[in-house]
Structures are given as structure tokens and as C-alpha cells.
Amino acid sequence: MTTMHRETVAGGPGAFMTVDHLTVSGSQAAIGRRLAEEARSRYGWRPVPADPVVSRARRAWFERNWPQHYARMAGAAQAMGVDLRDDLVHLDALSGVPDGSGCSATWSAPSATVEGRALLGRNYDFFTVGWRQLFALLGGETPPAHETPMAARPYVITSRPDDGPATTVITMSDLDGCTEGINEHGLAVVLLLADTESTSGSPVDAGPQVGLSSMQLPRFVLDTCENVEQAKQALLGAKQYDLGIPLHYLIADRTGRAFVWEHSNGGVDHIIEADGEALCVTNHPLHRPIDPANPPRDNAETMLTYQRHEHLREQVKDGPMSAARLREVLDEVRFDARKADALPVRTLWRTVFDLDELTMAAHFYLGDAPDGDLVYSPEVTFSPVVQRHRVG
Image (cartoon, rainbow, N blue to C red; front, side, top):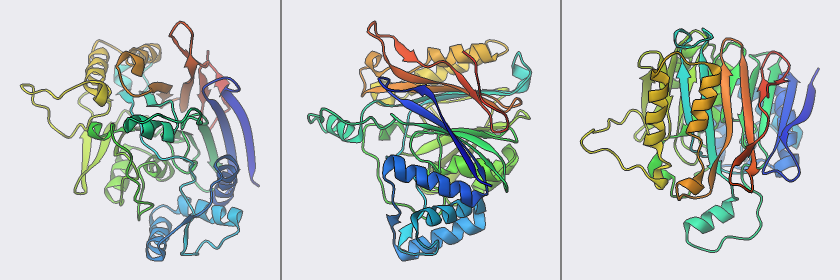
């Protein structure tokens, strides 16, 4: 039996964003059908025309390597009234806008926290305008007066399938991908912008390829892995591509292990292990060595990535971390482009994961107050295995 429950958990009319929480249960195919119907209703999504050779190869790759996604594609096909094996269309990428983001994230091992549990926190930094407005600003042109912001309708999606691990994810727009999430095994993933040189340009969209797109990778890990070691092996064996701005990922589990995954030019994979009991990441690749005698530039164009990274590292070294202190530290590196003379960007949400408790707590940006402060919703806690409850 398939069920879907919808609840607005943050924002609403008059706020910058409205956040809906979808809870979907049933078979993977039934979940895929529900999400495709949601994408069609919300974004006007339709199956994307495809090169038949690429379409067949993608379908075969998913069937072999990511059967949960393949089953959800079957549900999407049913929702749209097309054949799953129609080579002329792609039946995933249930999205309304391209992807890419800024962000900061930090992880602390159980041995380094007051609670004795692994904690992971992140800020999701993104533009507060629509894509036409952004491209106009990048090109020095006059932007259109009215356009719905790209990040105005994010989702929290809790999936409880009959045939796979339960997951809770946040997504800005891509209903079969995510920006972050946690599964019932206590494995969590967050994505971040990885190439600061790309933040001032337009995303490159070559269309769906064989393997995992940048937004699908976190969902793939949550669907197929129980811990960090399984995630490493799954990613090393997976084909990946950037659909938009390059990203990297912080992946952690409840046992106290974590790493950053980066996929660089030339197809080289990098696993950056935690150096001790903490691991911090912002928007510059960690596999590239930094010359102390010739430090990289750090300004509005880089979204102050090096400053934010150094502040996070210093704070986590100061002593045992707590969930309350983690929230404070993330707020200290919250991004407000007005203070950095940058393109219109804000920290759109902050999430804190307790990997042992299997929870993800988030608050969401609702707008700028007249006095210049950023207004956020009360924090809401989600879990793949228990009912949501409010914290603040």
C-alpha cells in the first residue's frame, strides 16, 4: 500500500520560501510514481528527450548499480504514461531548475562531542534570485523585475520503502536527488560547491549522462550504503559526472567515521579522511595543497571559502563540541552577500544531524528583516524512522 502525506513546515505566503515535507511509503516504484506526479504538478516536469544510445546505457547502469532508482524510474514512467524502456526519453531528473551551491559543513566524532554521539552540521548557501535574474546580473544586464527565486520551494522528503532503507533528505528542487540527507542506518551525506573558480560563471548543462549526476550522488549513497566504508567502495565503483557546477561531499556515519569525496578533472577520485576527531569543508577542493607562502585569494568571488574553513577548524579544535555549540558555530559562518559585496546569496537553511539519534534538524531562511537581520523559521527535526517534532 502506498501512502503520501504533505505538510508545510516552514514559510508560506509572504515569506521567501515555502517548505513542504512529503512522507511517502510503499514500493520504490510507487514512491517514484508519487514523486514524478509531484514534479509534474509543481514544476511542469515532463520526460526529457534523449539520445537513444545514451538512454539505453543509463537505464542499464541504474538497473545494475542502483536498482532503487531504477524502480522509481519505472514508477515515473507509469505516472507519465510512457514505457520504461522508451529510448527516446529520460525518466529521472525530476527537477525544475539547475543545481549548484555554496555552503559550509563540519563533522565531529562521538569522542569529540559532549553528547558522545557523532554530529554533522551544514549551512546551505544559495542565490535568492531566479536564473534569468542571475544570468542578467552575471552579464551586467538589467535583470527582469519579477521572477520566482530558484530556491523558493524546497522539499523535505521522507521515503519509507518496502524494499530499502528509509531516508530523509532536503532538496532545493530535484525530487529524485538531494542536497543532504540521512538514512535509517545513521549514514549522512551533504553536498557543497567544490570549485570556487566556477561560482562566477553559468552552469554547464550537457544533459543526463551515464552514471550519477552531482545531485543524484547523495541519494545513491543513502539508498545503497549503511556506513562510511560501504560508501567509499560504492563511490569508487560508480561512474559520475557534473551536471552543472562541480560539487564535493562530506559523508559520515554513526560509528564515528567520516570523509570528504571529491571527483576532479580527468576522472580522478579523492577520499579525504578526517584528520583526528573533526572534519571541515567549505567551497574549495581539499585535495589541492595550499602553499602557505602563496595563499589563495579569498574574496566575494570565492564566497570567503578559506576564511569560513579556517574559522570552522579553529572552533572544533577548542574543545568538546555540542549540538548547541555546533549551531552557534554554523551561524558564525552564515553567509550574507550584503556583507561580502557578492552576488545575492544567503544561507538558506542550516541542518544539524545527530547520527546516533537518526535526526536531522533544520531551520529555513524566510527573508530579510527591516533592521537587516536574517529571519529564519523555528527549527524542525526530521527522522527517517520516527515522526517529526519541533525543537524551537
